[in-house]
Image 1 (cartoon, helix red, strand yellow):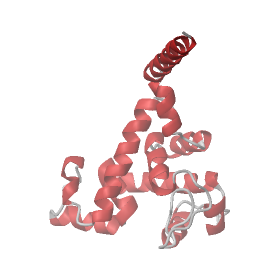
Image 2 (tube, helix red, strand yellow):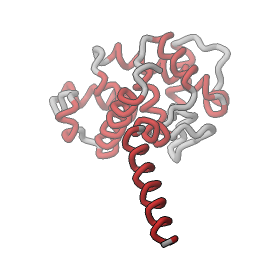
Image 3 (cartoon, one colour):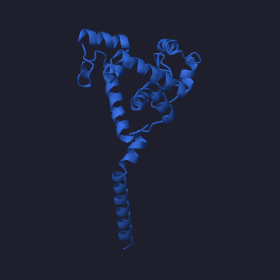
Image 4 (cartoon, one colour):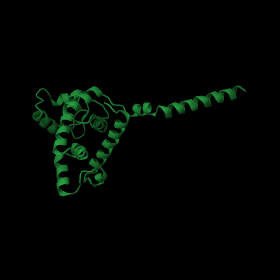
Length: 188
């Protein structure tokens, strides 16, 4: 008789747990897709008129919020800015107090520089966010060539035509995380 009571209690607990999981799926999803450095993302997004969900999605794709990262190619920080690009941004944006070392070790600086760069790419590509994401990965010169030659038209539904496989997958990943973040965090 005791085993029957234990089975029923365990069954009720299991049903309760499953119910909680389904009813609070946003809670679980937020655990699976957290956003760190929200204040920095929000401030930098506001400073440069960039969608904070896009910044968060790029950080998730680039480093999964892991600080101090340096890629095999030498990209620095949370947003994985290449050193030459970082030097150009620092000069163009007049970030006279920013160094490459700060990009790697200070998330707030990496996010600020990355947000400025995204704003610059949005201007270069007429606010086409898909082309901006591709340019963030492959470089604006490459994306400009693809668009000007007709190899790619800059749309998400034709992203399979992006000449670089890495960039095709990068665009898809960033958009996936962007959509997740928009659903889970309406306001950042």
